[in-house]
Image: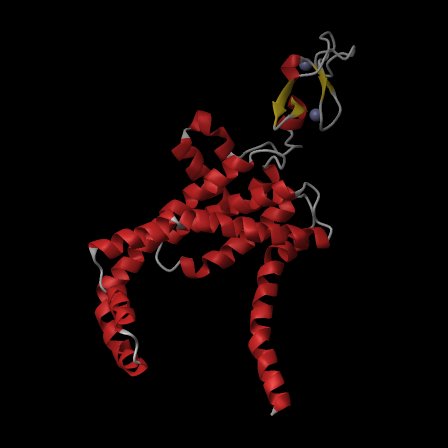
Length: 278
Ligand SMILES: [Zn+2]
Ligand SMILES: [Zn+2]
């Protein structure tokens, strides 16, 4: 808190002010000012709801406990993303945001692994019979055949390696993808002039958006998981940078859509060139 200002509190005229409100500029005594996300805010501003306080439950996990803080953050990202992202402090807490994302991915990837295993137990045999004729026709070398057989048979070994690759490696791989796309999305945001708080703010919003991937613990939600993530990122980017909504959408969807268009254009251009040559 700052030094005495020589002025008096706006509410208590006989008490010396120690701060000015970072929102409204009012003089405030120690009783009339509190610090929120590094900003000194007067009680009037808080009472009248003029400022969005840092309501990120994840940042309060010391007092709430990790499970409660984590759950409330998942719910905040899911039910009121814009409010949640607007209240985030864009300048700090990148590491804790990444930790939150990991804890949201872990149960999702684990259940994904369970669903996949159950599907193999249920349909592995019929799947194998279905593709059998193709395999015989393909004249594959015997060592490839034995590897293929293993795909359809659930064993202790396949469970262990499946668990390791989908859950153990899944978390770092997914975080890497978030960072990789975060860079591209931030560039897109800069291109439309929506970057006001810097790359860390974008990445932080991106990590917290991963909270909705937790719902992939429910079967088939993973089919829409990425689209849902992109919607939340759109809201998150514009909210954390306090910029226009459309800029958030361009930033979130731009890189992915560009990749899709490029991927689609390759076979098209090959076909086009082929047609020209023919
Ligand atoms: Zn104020
Ligand atoms: Zn006062």
